[in-house]
Length: 187
Image (cartoon, rainbow, N blue to C red):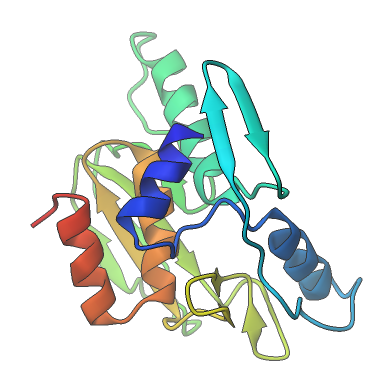
């Protein structure tokens, strides 16, 4: 929760865990269970006191969950003689060798080969979309759909940060991404 609120502040409200209802409605639309995307976005407060969380709105932790799971799995497996990395379908712990970024254009050739020891998170709209709407939304502008076909983020801190920043980058322009980099201290 603390990290979700941290990214909310640092991304100027683009990464927004207050949007649980919007997230669930958008996923229902993409599955074909609903006929339209949500018409409004939510506002509300979240307060944390120790281990107790109070909120007025359903929460959306999807932008952190996969990265968090990858981090916990890698942490658990560390020291057990592991020589690989943990992959969570686009989110991965620091790899032990080069990795290929899948092309969003259907090419068999990778878009890019990365050599890094940072956590990686990739997302593209070529896997989950319906009628031109994908699984990304920007609560700051109340806009559905990614600005980019595919985004890959490398984060030194952990996979949860790569996961959150990747979702922010899918919504923002190049100028917005530079602002996020400054907010996160990545400049």
